[in-house]
Amino acid sequence: MRVFVAGATGVIGRQLVPILNSVGHDVIGLVRPSASADEVERAGSQVAIADALEPAALCRAVKHASPDAVVNLLTAIPDEIRPRRFARDIAMTNRLRTEATRNLLEAGAAAGCGRFIAEGLAYAYDPQGQGLANEDTPLWNDAPKQFAPAIEALIKLETLTREANGLVLRLGHLYGPGSSYAANGSFTRDVRARKVPLVGAATSVFSFIHAHDAASAIVAALDKATTGVLNVVDDEPTAIKLWLPALAKILGARPPKHAPTAVARMVVGGWGTAFMTRLRGADNARARLALDWRPQYPSWREGFADLSPAGATTTAAAVARNNST
Picture (tube, one colour):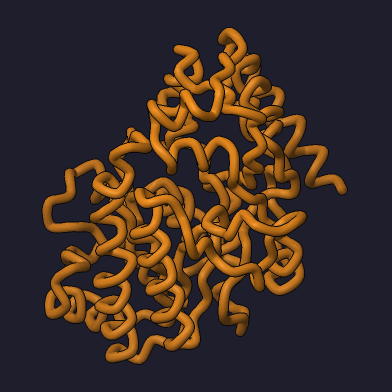
C-alpha cells in the first residue's frame, strides 16, 4: 500500500515511518518547504515537499504521490506550552486541524485515495459523568477559555474526516522520544525542578499512549474498514495524584508539591487548573476490538521506566512479559 504521511517528522511520524517500511508499505512523507535536512531525513526515503496550508501545492504533492491511504498527523505543538498562553501556543495546530485537514482530504480525494486516518485527542471529553469516557461520550462543550479553541478545531477535524468516511484515532497523552515527557522534554524538566504540583485533590485521570503504540494503531487501521472515532490509549487510566509522584520517583526527583485549587487558578488560570483536576480518562476497548490492536506499553509504568537509569532493562523486561501473554 502507498501511504502518504502528513506530519512524518513529528513525535508519532518518526515512529510510524520505519514501522510502515518494515511491514512492506511504500511511504511518502510530507515535509514543509522550510524543513531542515534532519527533518527531511526523518521523513523517509520518499519525501513530498509542500505547505499543508497551501491547497494547490499540497494537491500537486498528493497527486504525484498517488497514495492508497493518507495519514494526517499535522500539528505544530511547541516543546513547551504554558496553560495561560495555551490558546496562543496551539493556534497553528488548530489551523492545521481545520484548514490543512480540509486541504489534505480534498487533495486525497482528487488523487483517488480511499483511506483517511487522522490524529485526534482522547482527553478532550466532557468531565461530567462517571467512569471512563468511551467514543459516545461528548467532547467538552463548556471547556475553559484557553482550551475552547482546541475543542472547536478537534470537532472540525472529526467532522471533515467522518464526511470523507475516514477514521480519527483519539490519542491519549502522548509520550516517548521527542515528546514533552521524554527524558529531555519540557514536562519532565519541570517535574525534576518540582514545578508541577498536585493541585487540590489531583483528580484528573490521564490515559497515556506511547508514540510507538500510537503508530502501531495507525498501521493496524490501514487495512480495516473502520470509520468514525476510536480511543487509542493504554490499558491503565490513572489519576495524576498517583502517576505524578511515581514519575518523580522514577526521575530521582523529590515528590511534587501540593497547591490549593484557588492558588493554582491564580497562577495557571482555569485551563491549567482543569488540566490537573478535571480530565477524564478514556476506554480503549473499541480500538482493541475493531483494530485487533494491543499496546506494547499497556501501562505508563512500563513506558516511563525508560526515563530511569535502569530504564532500558526494565522496559525490555516489561515488553517481553506483555508479548508473552
